[in-house]
Image: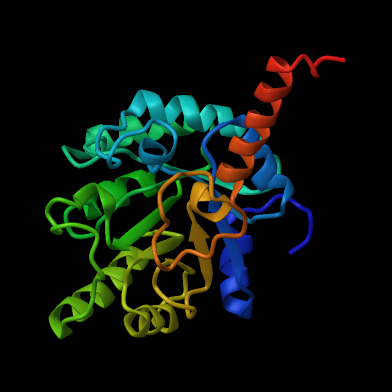
Amino acid sequence: MNGKKVRINVLIGAKAEGRRFACLTAYDYPTGLIVDQAGVELILVGDSLGNTVLGYEDTIPVTMEQMIHHAAAVRRGVKRALLVADMPFMSYKVSVEQALENCGRLVQEGGAEAVKLEGCREVAPMIEAVVAVGIPVLGHLGLTPQSVHALSGYRIQGREKEAAQQLKADARRLQEIGCFGVVLELVTPAVAAEITADLQIPTIGIGSGPSCDAQILVLADLLGLGNKKPPSFVKQYANLYEQSVKAIESYAGEVRDSKFPQ
């Protein structure tokens, strides 16, 4: 893909032509700027900022105000990539009216070009309504972090035949009601491959094997910005946490030893 602005039709065209594309999270102006300049096609302001930026144990405490604040910061750093933002826990499942209002806020106040909603059957009316007013929606199936308690933790989805069939049916349903793509998180690779082959919209995998049309990772996991071991499916391309600690230790030592400033 060239350096032109990435829009939804570009990603759907990539799917049709068999071209893979890359997705990554960002949470503020500097990370948005860096990820955009690196050429990633889709940037997600994920509610994973709860874990990686705000220090929560999971994504559930993240609020609409926090998502809008962080999305707006990322927006100021992003020029080329398609900017998608997560709808946080309980911001869209109460009613169609609630979903419309909050999705509209994330676009108008946060600068998102699309929103991501978790689930299918329970949120299908909300997705249809949001798409109908002109807000693009990215779906999310498999391990849905906002339902982590109901799912009994972070477990691979689609292992049983019935569960696999339901995932495939849900993916088709999301396509039918207007989603431009679907994230498949911790879905067994075989099921993810079947869904990818079945859909005309792109699948974006995270921990779901190599057959998806695109891949997404949490930026902190990719760069090694945390002090916890990342999930087993993550390839860590750097260890900036350790490098940062060492750099700051060097600075502090030079200050104490009167070596800085000269």
